[in-house]
Image (cartoon, rainbow, N blue to C red; front, side):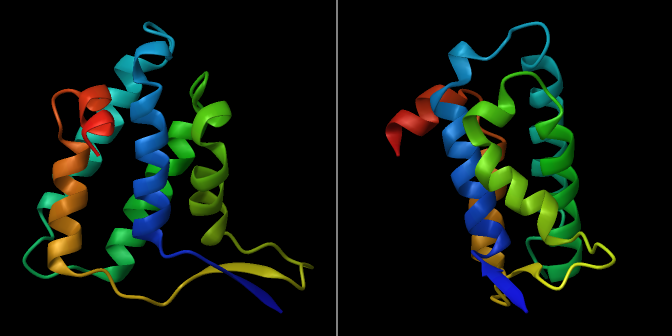
Length: 131
């Protein structure tokens, strides 16, 4: 049996919007510099696949981002649910009869562009408020 989750792009967007809304309150030294590097790196990777999105590459990038972000102080409390789903969706555990799988919806070029722009925004808090 497998449990269907929202598509990767939806989970990523929800997690980032939750983080952006709380951006001013995240630990400045322990979290923000690393999270800033992670989101800019993911933005660059997504920008590189806007012409022809590779679903597997997109999922791997989102999964890796989620795993790294969850290790940072304060992130799990804010966006742990969606990031946790992203991180867990690609994991397979021996002996488990229930697997977490993401929706099979393919990510489009336009959607990848939107997410890359969201991740590359210069002011995350203002971006979230503007949404």
